[in-house]
Length: 149
Image 1 (cartoon, one colour):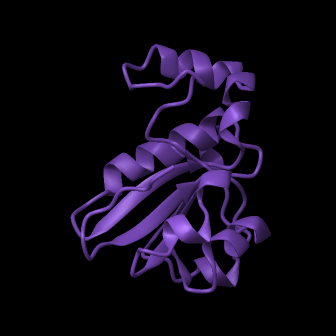
Image 2 (cartoon, rainbow, N blue to C red):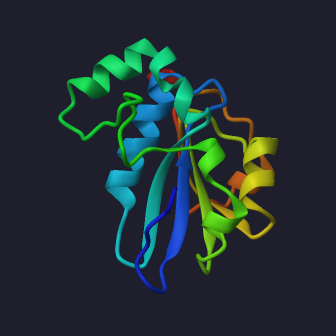
């Protein structure tokens, strides 16, 4: 899968928690739409393989009614999935960042996939703050445990 970008811009991958539940996917997509600007491309990603999207029936039903273009796998066509974020696909970007939604600590798999040059660009979460060192200086850091799912 080819990840499109505009010349000279950085990339931020917005990803929800490891469970890949509905609020993780929706929050990653919403944050990407909200923060995507010229110079910094936000790409929403799900933390599970594309072929598993149909198994998440709540997400498949929601996106089927959303008006967003969806593929035969029921996933929104602009939603990346973890196996698609390869070093080859990401290597063309001058800078790589991650935006965490529905969790506030960078998972080992995320750090391994995105690499050492990855910075935390945003944290938007409703869980208890783990105060992970890599997220404390994030330019956008909103954690409200009282918000609920």
